[in-house]
Image (cartoon, rainbow, N blue to C red; front, side, top):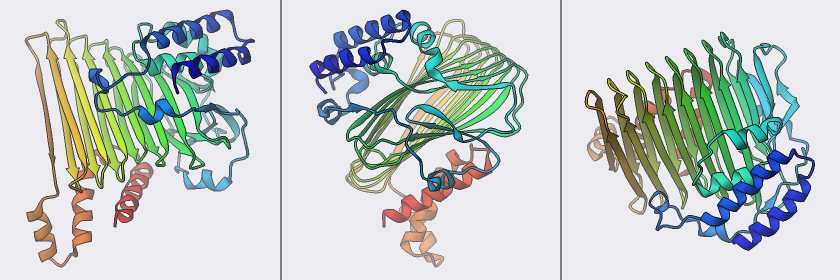
Length: 426
């Protein structure tokens, strides 16, 4: 969409939001004006030089009709995760009928984020320069708010099923999700994004995540996208003293998928563990951009991103770790490993370190290559055919990431999807 189309849409959109508080409307206007000043990024911008936005910019995406149309029960059953609290959102709106929250603790608050839009827009990410974050703040219309009270220890993980269901062609969704983990609490959140049709979709989501003192959050984001999906995620995390944040970003397909992850370690003795697995085929394109900023001493961070690329797909990993002067005794490792299953697949990798403290232990590394021919020969010499040999090697390559998932039902689900993806390649 060109900027004139955005202007027309924004004028109409504001009229539909006339009942909102004036502060929220003002926040929307400010964000939109800043977006117009910046415009769409081009390949001349360093952090966007591998991102082809031509198709996104040319498509005239319409807004969802907002209707919570009936969802086939089969969709729920297909994405069932045993022993979890199911939370269903349709087009960014909470659906209590399809959710299973009967036994959920009173210490967990789950609401539509619309009740907090004004606070979120005003108080988070004030100095935004990312045009898609600004576009989100202008047009946001859905999302969730989850707050975990202090001293809560989970009985079962939360399973968020975010279903996009719309009959319109070329739909755009702008959502904001807020997760607040209270002091001394522990919770796991599994989130799946599901699109029920095969039409053009532009999904633009902001996550604001707060992990308070002595708390632990495990966040698994599973994205299975069809070939017409463009999915941009902007994940902002703040950690306080003695907190742990773990996330697995699993990307299976999609025309253009980009995850921008910004973690501010604002406390001492924190642990941060980020991992990702991306499975790409056709002309699919997946990017992971990470910024991990160690702002206090005595904290650890680990990053492990793996890509498996076939046909003419493209992957991008750009990771930056910064260690501020006060962040002595920091220990940080950053690793990117990739397998190319085709001569036409392409991977761009750029791990980086910026260190302003002298008593630290930091490392980074990247490796890209094809399947090991000696290993294939060995397996074939033991009676395995070529397809089985390649499948075993790819499974073993992915295992380092999948083993970080400690919920057995989720790990089994992911392994099943990996085998299905490999089968479809042959």
